[in-house]
Image (cartoon, rainbow, N blue to C red; front, side, top):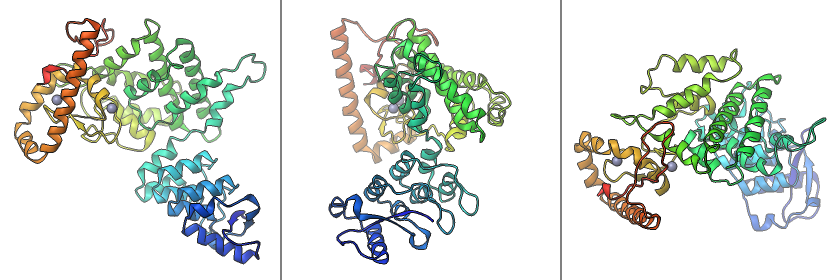
Amino acid sequence: MCVGVCVCVGAKKKGGKRWQKCLFQVGYQVNTSRISTLNDSMILSVSPQYGMTPLMHAAYKGQADMCSLLLQHGADVNCNEHDYGYTALMFAGLSGKTDITSMMLDAGAETDLVNSVGRTAAQMAAFVGQHDCVTVINNFFSRARLEYYTRPQGLEREAKLPPKLAGPLHKIIMTSNLNPVKLVMLVRENPLLVDVGALEKCYHVMDLLCEQCVKQQDMNEVLAMKMHYISYVLQKCMAFLLDRDDKLDVLIKSLLKGRDGDGFPQYQEKFIRDCIRKFPYCEAALLQQLVRSIAPVEIGNDPTAFSVLTQALTGKMAFIDAEFCATCGERGAEKRCSLCKMVTYCGLMCQRLHWFTHKKICKGLQEKDAPRLRELNDEESDMVKETASFLAELCLKAEERMVSSGCPGPSAPDQLNCPSTSSEGPPSCNQE
Ligand SMILES: [Zn+2]
Ligand SMILES: [Zn+2]
């Protein structure tokens, strides 16, 4: 029998039917002030109405508070005795709510359960166009699975992964933005990870997880490739760090540096191609599919290795367009370069990081796109003003930094792989 959890609000113990009624009222109308008065004794296991548990109802209705409460009180997240075999995770995916989808996954929802027509939660969500939920499900990796490595196993005297690294590493595993610049930024922002010894342990664990994903009974090539990719990025971070602590900035700049002429980030393309080529399980169908898509493409043409990899790993197309940050690939970027209006950034830091290379093509982009620019200038005068003040602020900051460091002016790294300086090269007065 399915164990749904019956929640009764504002009623003393009654017969089963009455409980169930209360429960579905709660399922439809969340009143958190009343919910907070719940206690465990008010929760019963009942047969769910129409095969739907309260958790399924709440997930489908997008009621995060209610889902959280039901889970806290022991609702079975994997119950799929629904008439058509749906699980709460499937309903969360159908609702399009990524927070609820994550909540179900964190609570232990199985991603490979199928409904009566053999579809998983990710497939159901994709079917109704809820691609953000698909990405959340496809990229899910339970913290518990990683924490296994924080305890010594068998004859080990020391765990493979120090417990303090589990959190930061899990954050990297869970990111759905696979832009290598973003991954390096995630390493750089955490002092625990900016350490050769720590990175070495992390990448070993990622390699073990990759192997596990390939060798487990229901082989998960997608997750294996993602683990390998993260391992590769961590190894690169390590290699750059071995030199000097601030070398991660150099790695970021190498990844961003565009070639002369069109600004295409050649190093980034080669970086990702090299990573794919080094996937250790050459019989994997996914690897062969990636190689087939990438190998015939000349460097600089579409599709890029990054877009092919992103699509394979997250099921989403990676576009290089206005919606995405030109530096870190984060979605929802709204700050436009005020000169060419052709690239967008998620914020000041990303624009600053990109300027050393963007400045070389910015002018060309302006000239190429002059008619559209005039249009934009009319239509988006507010936005232009906003970006202008944003750039003025940048200039000010750049000047301050130059004064405080006694540096006469910004200089950009010239070598692709091993630039000798890691100057900030911010969008400075050049942009006026
Ligand atoms: Zn960004
Ligand atoms: Zn520009």
